[in-house]
Image (cartoon, rainbow, N blue to C red; front, side, top):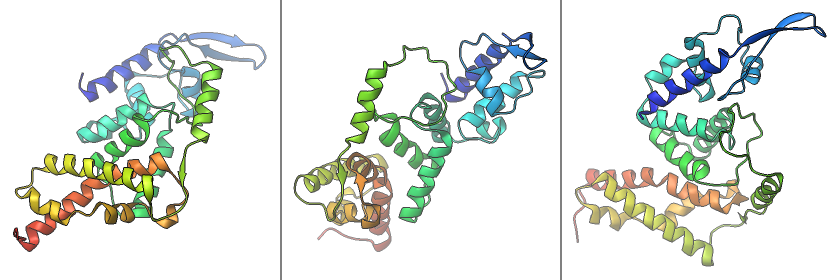
Length: 260
């Protein structure tokens, strides 16, 4: 299923949930209200948080809400989004229990500010995969509007995950040394080779000559970021490597470097 088709399905599901609407009179409030029997989304929560007009809710309104849930201002904006942006939006919806869309926006802004860069859609997608989608233990303090189709984890399992999250190893001093430095270099080298192959540069051997993993790690993990979760630091090393590889490849192209 194409990503945009996935969102069309979510909008249809939300619209179906609204169509379960049944009016009732609330004597305590002295007003006519609606109740729902949804299967996919928490309609009551969405009505409250998005100020939805329950009397005139159309499929177009449902599309608008779905777009808002994944960071777009409106449905038409989503239709014009790049494939990586749509894939990221799907991951945001699928991982709503891990991080709110608003918090993800702040997270990316912080990364860009700290590193004085502007991330494109593909960069953001790779970071989300590395830091959130593929990492367990994250728990959003926001509301998950989805009605879980899977069995919810037990309170005991939630406590265990919270403990695991709190016990995350942190890096407190720089430069890295010993086992930490060795592992970070191994991760950087592997990602470097994968990225270099993906860009299919005409002279990969020349790009390798410019590659210095220790220097790169020092560029990414800076003193003002301490203390920093070790796993998060590793994810940053992977996430920003494409910029470094492109920078080195460009240097090779511009300077016309030759093999000695």
